[in-house]
Length: 416
Image 1 (cartoon, rainbow, N blue to C red):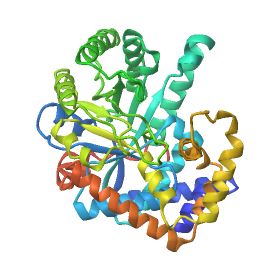
Image 2 (image 1 turned 30 degrees about the horizontal axis):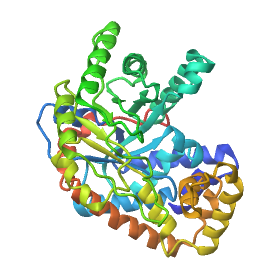
Image 3 (image 1 turned 120 degrees about the horizontal axis):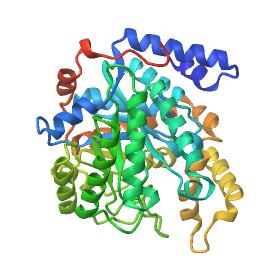
């Protein structure tokens, strides 16, 4: 499987790469793995049929095969079925992972770890660029995001998070989110309802989302969506609540502690469910203090997005070669020297930009000796077990099996 994954990622010939991906897809189908949408699960959560847990959405930026194996091992040990693999629009570029490759490599990890059942793949932060949208023309920017959505759905991403929060204006955000909802409904495969997320507050900004803003967004969204006929709307709503993607590293080298207001999260989620959604989504959470995670299920947060800390575990592992880390850091210092802020210490500067090295050094990172990668994977597994327990998704395998029966399983849409 390791050799097949290497071919799927690094084959110089496009034909060989496609053959390796196709072989993985075929094997996954035979092993009882399929791709699905969280829509059915989230509808049950919206109706109150199942609650009390927060679904983790996991972004893997590097060592994807080894990291995904760690997820599947942790899921097996804790009997977890409710979890998502996702990749953001920006991550596709700076990690040099195509949508096809991402799915294939994670499926290979699932096969290796003898996983069975549905896997949920999500397009995270499919974002409108405000500079392009307002200066270069709305039509071109819309076409680009629609092209990405179409490709993602055809590849097997049956969960799409639309992010128009950067447009600032709530009405503009709601209008565009409804238009993209209509586009997704036209694109989704037959007998498949793609789960769609909307986003209100822009993640990382000082201003937290209010209940009033959530109501304004949803009312405007519903009004605009009704123009397209009777369509299923968003299944969840992402909000801003004091977090920053990647966290904020202090000059001391420690992450700034975020003081979450869990009471407002509960109010927002309950208001979101009045609109027949599963609730709210928390972004930028992986670097939060450990003590925070158990509060998310209690605050009725339906989904939480986790990314940077897995990257941190890999970079900071004693099994990550020191010489490779030195080469990467020297490259960052040279490549992004002009973008270094005067107020940033070297450690803050490197922390901010080291994710940008994951694509250019992808092969070198994958070539880390297997014994080292296995140890890093074990470290990641412990982190996933902690998160699964804290988010209370342990023992959800049975629930997922009941909702997603074999009779309703979906064939792979693009690669079959």
